[in-house]
Image 1 (cartoon, chains in turn purple, orange):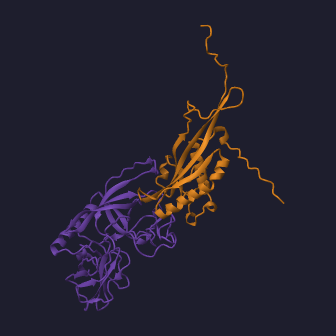
Image 2 (cartoon, rainbow over the protein chains, first blue to last red; image 1 turned 30 degrees about the horizontal axis):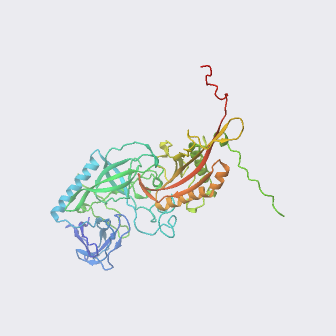
Image 3 (cartoon, chains in turn orange, purple; image 1 turned 30 degrees about the vertical axis):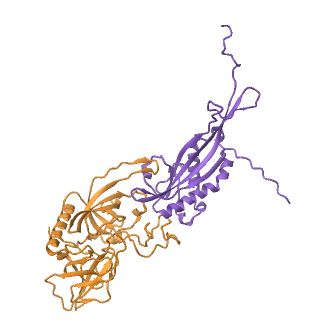
Length: 307
Length: 217
């Protein structure tokens, strides 16, 4: 419970500022050493933005421009090491920019209500979000030597993405989806098709992007995320998103993608999709930063709203 | 020592009784595709080795949905179990053109007289084509798959014309890669086949000429 808030003033060409704020009741032996880390997913690989940690400071500078396209998929988190080696990590935050304290409180309340609607209402459905890898080692099994494009079907090394591993580990993601149609028809160019597409709404954290997967936890239905629209935002910082989801056909190789490694609420079943506990939100840090041993950093933090 | 010339005769085919028709050609192409993907030995590109068409135990003319990893079906086959199974090669008949000889009239092309009994033999040249729609989850895969399919048919085109009563059988085009909107992002390439064959029939005079003309009037 060390961090109250982390926010990022993002600069495309490099020089992004990562700010943090500790809870007032943190009383660990000083000095505090902070290291800002960045990654492409909330539960992916984390890399320090600088080799020089910040001692007893409140911000760090990321000198690198991390984005090379329009997709804002850069996340930051802050690592705190106290004098007695106690280590704490902040929740990962997306590089969406900072909010003034009042707006931040409003945003946090909106997120709380979104979760209330999803988790306590009858529309929400628990599932897992799998962020598609967009960088990393090129798959040695299925990619073409000359073009590096995926050229072989049914590859279980990259799951069709061309990047080894295919997808980041799943994280829990609640979604309220519209009812689905079940029409199956013959298309003159595609054979028997059943283009089941629904729209879903969820909290914009982690931020789902086109190409990611969402897996219904109770039904193992796997959906490809299409277009994503921001449904609610506070001063440009997204709070909730609406997205198109297209049901993958049963023959899709992605139904073979194992999900048993994501630590589902103690479940030992391997055939049932499972995922990490409720993902943190950038606006809930006040209650839920996780303190852990240095050799056991959390992949995601737990939101524990007081409903 | 010289080798005796080999006499190549068109093999007797079950098609002899019925002749070719477009729907029958759909089945012919489908069988060839299924035979190709039945055994790994016939698959040329190493990246496609994992693709298998497995016949159903109960009915060898249908696919085993559980074990088949490439959908090979006519495009109009209705089977929800196959919904959007990919990769796929779907067989679709294109337009067939009856090459009527307009100068001879009555849709009868090139009458051939010769038997001396008043009968006339006619032929109808028919040209047409099929499209093999290759669909896969990535552009690179569908490129590989489409060329595998195209090779299969352009290399066996001559065999087809000998084995079946085609006058010509050829692969004429492998289309560009097209992106299609499906549940997942898929890509398609159309392999176009064109062929020509003739339908032939004989009209035999059954009654004397002018039998129906009343001369008593």
